[in-house]
Length: 140
Image (cartoon, rainbow, N blue to C red; front, side):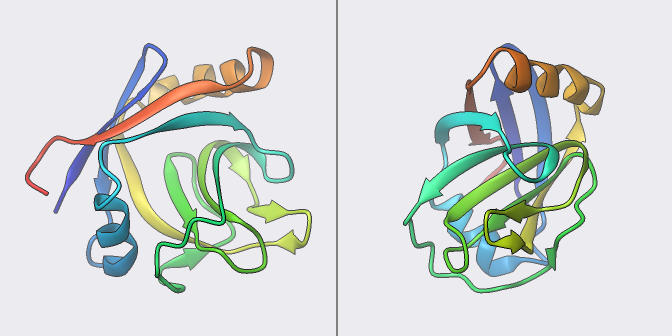
């Protein structure tokens, strides 16, 4: 199992990759570590931020997919009906896009820092794009 450290601005979280439930997605994501990008407010999903990955292909299909993630349950949506993206729910959400409801692979669960999710949401909504970095903190 791989634990990760997630930094959004000066907010810090730890998380667990869901190796058993989404092994292909986790393997593909591990290959991107350390991962750096911008986290922005989701347009259709409610209380969630997202990292657009455009046409990036990670070579994974559907596994451990949901449209109703809990706060702190990160999803990876492989390319298909919508672009490749990572959804970072900070509150209530239903994963959607301009083409309608989506299902994303639940691949990462926050294990600490949940008390900072409201602040993360406030920042992406009112301050705009936030830097995000995700790095392994246990053997990859």
